[in-house]
Image (tube, rainbow, N blue to C red; front, side):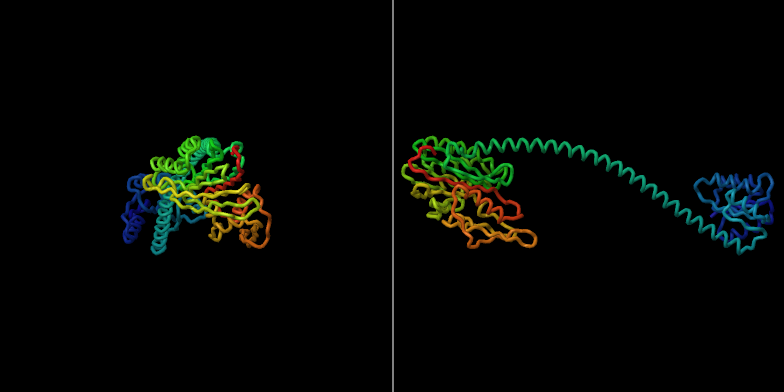
Amino acid sequence: MKALVVDDNKSNLHILEILLKQNGYTVYMAKNGLEGVELFKCVKPDIILIDIMMPVMNGYEATRLIKEHSGDNFVPVIVLSSLSAPEDIAMAIESGADDFLTKPVHHLILKTKILAMERLKSLYHNQKIQNIKLQAAIEELRQSKQQLEKYSNELESSNAKLELLNNKINQEHDAASNIFQKVLQHNDEICPNIKSIITPLEVFSGDIVMSRRKPSGGCYLLLGDFAGHGLLAATGAMPVLEIFNRMADSNQPISDFVYEINGKLKKLLSSNIFLCASILEIDCHEGLVTVWNGGLPDILFVEKNGGIKHKMSSMNLPLGILENNKLKCELQKYKCTPEDHIYIFSDGVTETFNHKNEMYGQERLENHFRQDTVKPNILYNKVGVADYEYNSVKSKYQPDKILEQIKQSIDAFRGNVSQQDDITMVQITYHPYCREY
């Protein structure tokens, strides 16, 4: 460390030199204030001891100039003077001095003052470093804030563009979905005896319903459920529609429908997409219904006043899995009587789950078709979730309202659990000798 002593008295210089060297300082000495200022500029001392009354330049002026040249560095200045009046001490402090000692100074007091100034200088140095780090952190934070604001503006702009794009996509999806459903769903004016409800999980349904009059009288109907749901599941619907209409218009047996659709789907679709389907041919003259069921729930034949009189379970694999030469075509037949109702469902009906992870199931579904329909009794627990049960409350079977009643029953059973799959239900009313299917 370096010390600067400024005093015009050689004896004082010598004494202070010895004391400072004992404390580990390299000592530089000046005989007046001007010389002291110039020496300060050259050696940049760590501490200064300065007298007041000196020739050329007094200690007050020298202290003021030294403090000016110190800038933001803390260089402690201790004034040593024989002057002891309060105004002298005040003037020294005003000039920039950090301490004031009256001569003669005891060496222990001077040593203690020097040590105190060293601690003060160390604290100032550490504080300066902390200030530099703080300023750097503040600047980094400011830059980060500017960058964040930039990113935020860019994100806001991107979000606005995405929202516009999303709105456009939704509009296009809605338009495409409307066209898609109009193309696929049967026309009630063409087949007034066929009613259906389709509740898609997404914009595009993986379930399809197609119906077509038979040229010879009666009709064909197909209910299909592609594996999965949404647009990907619906991609196979158009080729199925083309085949269905072509085969129906040429009055083909439903076995031909099966092989034509299976061959096309096997070529077009990936291995993880297939079609569970029920294909029906209804002969209005004989009342004979021919059914191919591949992977869908039981088809129900219900008397006009209620009561299940016959069921047809799935006897075939879904379409699009096997090559035609490996595919079996098991057909089932049943003869209807006037005003019988035929019900076909996708597995989204029976495989609906509630908050207890219970499945709606075939039994709950079939309870709707009893002559005295067992109505659901819906109880609500403490959190408002429906607990779905059956009791002995009965109501008359109403075929004109049954599909909507089943839908409401499924919704009540599911409660606040999200829909898991597309849900499709079809009702066919058999009218004999009617060519207006």
